[in-house]
Image (cartoon, rainbow, N blue to C red; front, top):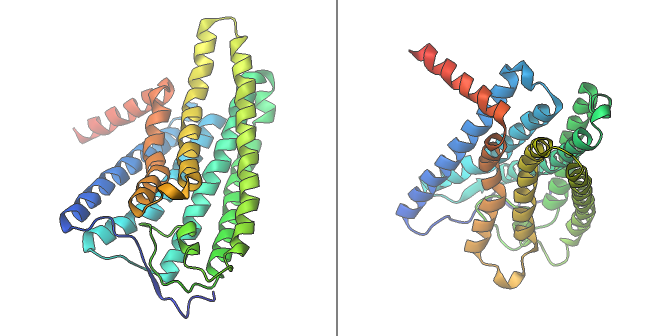
Length: 311
């Protein structure tokens, strides 16, 4: 890439000015990272070990946990290392890899959440056709489409971002390599090439958003018509975790990228970035396990089995 010869490293935003606060951020990020690893790891283990959970909903949940682990592992280990060793540097290739992987995992997760909305729609609105519309082969194809779309989106954005000439230094106002912060270093109007890619992405993102909204409008209409209160409760229990995850994902990302420039500052940018990049992967397992009795029972059995083996 054209910038490789002129820039060998980027300088990330320091999390704090004092050594004590840097270490505090290290322990805070370490706690969040371990919580994300534990929560998503337990979901992966539960779905893999219990054959009763080998259904489309849990198959997609397994993929979601993998994407969450990927996205948070792309950002936090480097941020923790920089805080621990009191450095800001990230190599040029490391920055390229971080941008690619983060866009890949975040994009794939958004597409997967769209697929999961379709899964909930078919399960509640067309239960008699669920086996044919969301069979095992269809699930694999839809999950592969989500991962593949995320990969193509990441290739497109990474290539366009790092082919743009950078002449505004190498200091980024973020604790990880983020495309908007890299574009601020571009020369004059050269960033417009990436803007067109962003416009196309926005159309895709908005399309997925409307699909999710339309799916839930149909779902809530169907749920209201269910005669029994128990049936309504079961339907809501199936949908609320996914709806909560989607809301958290979209609201934090929208606030990060659509907030007015007048309220922008390095500290606020960092807080918002933590909200949309670090918080969802750590919170998603908690959201999905709170109202899911099958998952809670499986996790309880796994923990009891592990404890009994130690004794």
